Figure 1 (tube, one colour):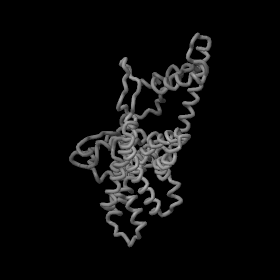
Figure 2 (cartoon, rainbow, N blue to C red):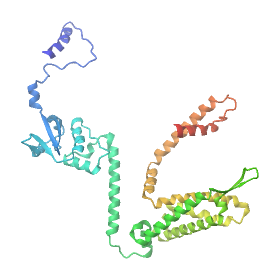
Figure 3 (cartoon, rainbow, N blue to C red):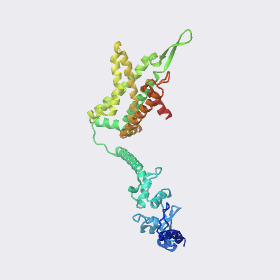
Figure 4 (cartoon, one colour):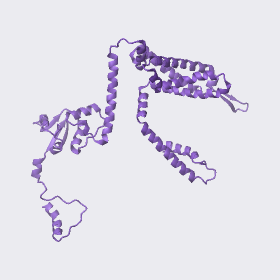
Length: 379
């Protein structure tokens, strides 16, 4: 009767030829409204017990996907006649994502849950991973790829430890020791020795710039500050020489043991090794020539690149390098966007301060520094 009363004004308006405009959707036709008895026949409430935690939903909700376990008749094997519910000895925390898939038709990937456990639940309930929604699919693929890479590394490490090595020549044994330091005790010892000298070299490069002595005038003012590198020149030179000898021996041994020497010399790590040791030998030839003594000082700057040798000893740094390489286009676009913003805001600052007396923004390039500092620190 209530639905008939809702339609009565529209029936009277149609009788006189007037059709009103309504912004709200029309009420359902009385002929289309199912009765409560029909609803009871067509649908019923289902209770699902997952390891003690109960979930309730409608039977029609599960039947949206008849090819799955809960949507098909296979779920009857898990029905408990005494408690009148379906019991599954599964993970209840992950099941709520699966039940949400039946309700909304969208499968979301829980980022904080174990990938393997989530895939096991999907396989048990007969849901394909391709059903994951677009909003979560990229995260799912990234985590799956990381998981596969980790498993491959674990398998390769296990195989390398358990495998019976064939008769290798001296070059192959050396290369295997360089690439897998944990394969033998001497390889591991050489690995830690080179890492120690890398740390000593970087630390020496930092300490020699610290002021160790100051010369004070009679008036009490500091007239000159002498750095540790100038005060202990010979000691730092000996330390630097010892580090370079170790680096040179390492590079020559790697070059000798490399399966493809041309490919090895073109690799990034090989270039880093050359940049770390070559300035030292060039500097030895320039020390006695006063005309190019300034160039020798400039070459000392390149010693800072020895810090990149740590990437050979750190898997995390190598992963970071691979990540930056794979995201080179995105990072390039980010730099390009920042450059555009710097030019735009520097131009605005210049023209706003153009007629101000004693302004610091005398040109657009002069306003670059203020713009860069503001964008990178204050946002």
